[in-house]
Image (cartoon, rainbow, N blue to C red; front, side, top):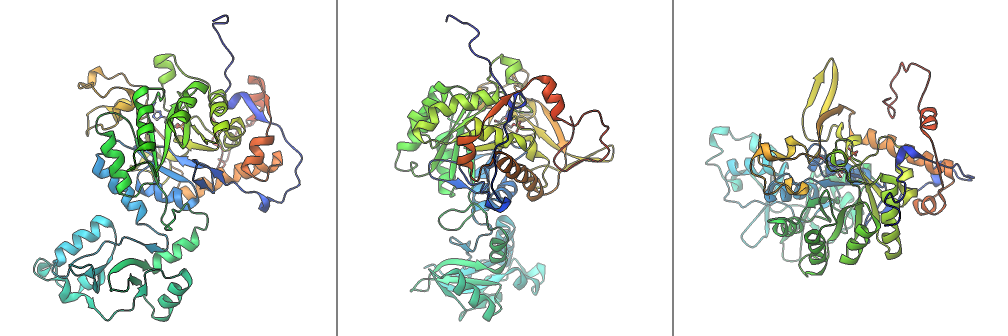
Length: 498
Ligand code: RVP
């Protein structure tokens, strides 16, 4: 090429958004944005598919807030599908596929089932799936544990006649029935008396508490899950679909790879899989994004090396500063109507708006969420302060066979490396400050985005994307942006210094 150095790449700290004329009340502002061709989210946030960030508890919390959790894949296929199942069975008014039990099951089996699915009440059905009773944890309490192995469900259950609702009952009618009969649970049956659903009071109250939650067409919480292309990735994809996953994220650290692009193409053409939304990633160039657009991806995820725990750029010398990467990818995605996800590198709420103006539609966060109560792993106490572990999926810890088997090291193209001392990591292991429940963390992040939109005069995300303008800044300006020349004495909930 004539100019071997190409163009200058910019990242979050290189730019600020220009203020714009604003004639808005804060309540006018709407943060809804497109996740994929077919799914929109009320808040444009995703939690990263990392084994210290997103398992079912985090995915549930994310969907309740109006975002989406992407389940990591450093798990067996069965375990990951089970996590999807846990999310799909949670909250939301109506459980469409309730776990049932037979009348001849023992109380010991009932207890095991209750633990496995973390639920406390079951419809009892006959071989024909007809409802013959209800049994709950309470029914266990009056039988001594020593007799659980020999006592059958039909000896303790509440038998028919039960109060039931018709299969297609409305929310209002269900509320009336629950109130009138002071029910904890309302089983739903079809004309033949076969079980079709279950409503619990607890879930009904919760779905009122989370009006913005991300729900599928049946009212269940939405969830994403990561897959790759290597080995049994196809089986993983179909198992996740069977469990009800809404979005598959087919990604590796370098997504501009033929086998991964082929995987996306196959997922979007095979009749067994093409109805699920598929995100391809990660790329950092226009050409890389175009390859996924051409393969039929429903969104493209952008980010090579910006992650807080990522060493890809130092280990390989490859990467593109994130604002430029997002902009370049959007040049391929926008004309095709394919949303862009800015993945990694965000440190503050102000960077969400920057990513959106650069061309993203949603952002994926790792370090900003890793300190939440709902992430996997225990609290670590260091010098009287609480922390949670946070590590790269390309770190030694996530890729080595120390501890337990690594299922995801093919994300860093190390699937065939069998001995730990031959692994070439591209990430580090560390910890972040404990931040409490996701709801409070998300409140600060979305509160920041609201202010971005107010300061730029944008009522909606598409308005912000269309009208937002950057100013490039120097390192002197960056210094001016942060608090300076003062000693911080009180920590703010959305600013931790550096
Ligand atoms: P951050 O939000 O800056 O912590 O970045 C999270 C992102 O970093 C993830 O969504 C993923 O794309 C990337 N990642 C995860 N592991 C590694 C690694 O080990 N290099 N990178």
